[in-house]
Length: 466
Image 1 (cartoon, rainbow, N blue to C red):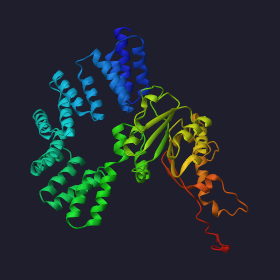
Image 2: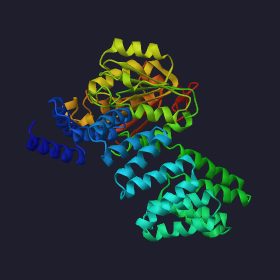
Image 3: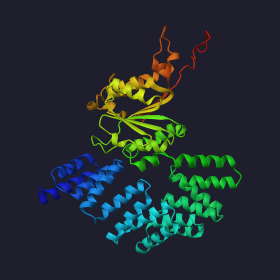
Image 4: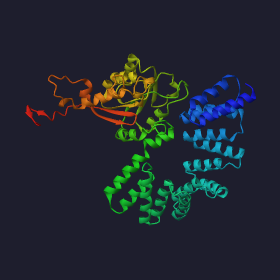
């Protein structure tokens, strides 16, 4: 490939990836590499695609290849450091960020990344020194001010912490991290009412952020308000393990591209400490064997005692690790899906994030819901395809029998089958075993159980309502 053509293709790939058109950008980069051209920039762009898909192993693989071609490119070294940090390999990450700083001594990003890594390692004095150097170069660096506030808090220097956090808030009044940390710093100084005001402001602005709840709980506990303290501590624990936070960490499209994580958190949190088996249909990463699995890793982190299983039509065996197992096959193959269910055994949660083809979703539900545990949850994502002809849906007839949402809406009447005034009505399996359904934007939760509460019309032969 000629140099001018290569530059042009790289530029087009960059534009695609910057606009979120990852498949189009990746296709161009793969074409460049398949032509026999050793191109570090194409490898780097593919690594960016893998990063945004949550595929950390693929990131490392591609970045190592890019560094071999361009060993002094700061971007490649920093990305490798980011991979190590995501894997909690802090020393390896620190080595990368220090190397990036040597290659590019003026890089504030490399310096800041060192501070973040040292703070994660608990090396507070070293982190403080690095952040002080950041502030010498950029006095209004808000990230450095925020983290210095955290460092001083952990060192017991509440006044220093408050000073830095107030500076951060002067730069950006919406900085909820600084609000929560300033509240903690003021509480440590005994300025309780001021502290409570900042903490409540932090909670109001960012209810998913856990830090403020812990300090509010401590203040309530010190005041002898034990029930209030318990509520705050419970909120702290819930948000500390929030699926929104985990979805961001693992870069799954269940937050950002969609906003499913908050609904998952609400429904799944009571199951978090249980020894569950979770099956997700659809692993992601398209047809690339090293891409995908972001949500499987998120579920693994959220359910520390759970076993996570995935199904994909592509070979995703590279995604397997401790407590994650994958099966290759089509959800449209009922014999295959039965074999998967038998292999897993008791299934507590099933998530259909597969083909999104209406017929597939309906048929898969009919196969797997009877095999779900008696108190299990079945979730269907991306129900918007009910309205899209490409997936077998339609916007012209909202009650079309081939539409998945029409199918699930029909099942909702079954919740009340005992109230049907139909002589000799014989309830279906779904009517007897669906106990609740929750419809959200583009997703449905179906709870399984025994739907036998009895009728409110006739009980023991007595007419209750006229």
